[in-house]
Amino acid sequence: MNKPLGIILIIGALVLGYLGYTKLENNKAEVKIGELEISASDGKSKQESYIYFGLAAVALVAGLMISRGKS
Image (cartoon, rainbow, N blue to C red):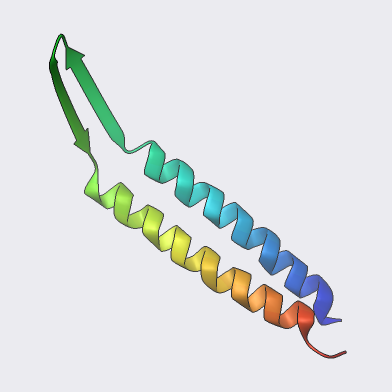
């Protein structure tokens, strides 16, 4: 009975990890003019991506523990 819940948590962890990764990669803006390169990043977006990574880690561990539990 717990195995489907564990699988759902593992899939949710993968989704959260992907969302965190895309949010982290998309928070940068760069302008390059000749040799001069100017870049900026959004601190709030970076913080949100780390929260997604943390939630993904918790969901993954919980999913693995639930799915490996004795039936």
